[in-house]
Length: 288
Image (cartoon, rainbow, N blue to C red; front, side, top):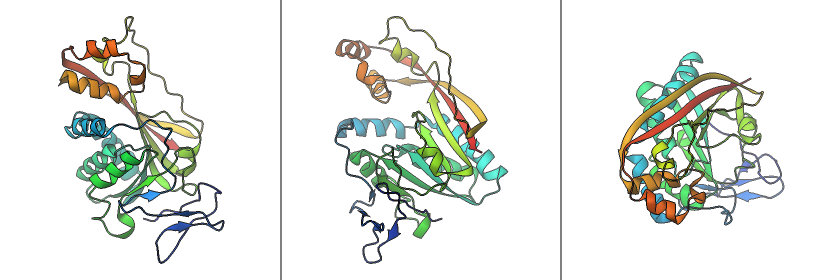
């Protein structure tokens, strides 16, 4: 399963330089493979907010504990039902947009293999944070264990301009990310699927109670662009028991963490989270 790459600077076709195996275009823009195993399509974005090494370890430990596996299993179920069974494909290409340290790539691949052992999914992750993409590459056994074109790939690159030719991927995944701009749709094949995981109204409700004085439950809305048709929408809700320290890590995974003041964090550190609500909407949409 090969991918056609496109220069993120000038939109020219990227070709492979034989001796170095790096990419280059007709305008002499060049992109190389790092010693750590990920492709460098952009310089690290120093302006972007990156997690500390300690926080990254805490997030990974929490994710690897399986806290969100019901969500991952629903993702795999929808992919298996629609991409694998309905289209009768035997292989596919996935792009995980802004993949972070790659947990959802690894977990989705493992869960889907259990449902569809004969289906081959090549997975590609892209992220602007160098420490995250380094961690993703290091943690994924399928980067080097698989042979040739079936190996997973990770790219350090900007998400506003993806380094892929149009209509390359059968599946694009967005986890805790809003769909913005046209890049995800540009690289998604006609008939391909966009899988989006979004927080539902009750997600982390007990954590939010420590942050907001007047907390109200707002209805979920997600307006899809005209190019996409919603084919499945599932709500995944359950409760977990976490420590106050784990609750703080979960808070750091949310987009509103930067607004939380020290006084509120101190209150959170003393909270009881024996029945913390996890609440997600998993949506699958197909490109016309």
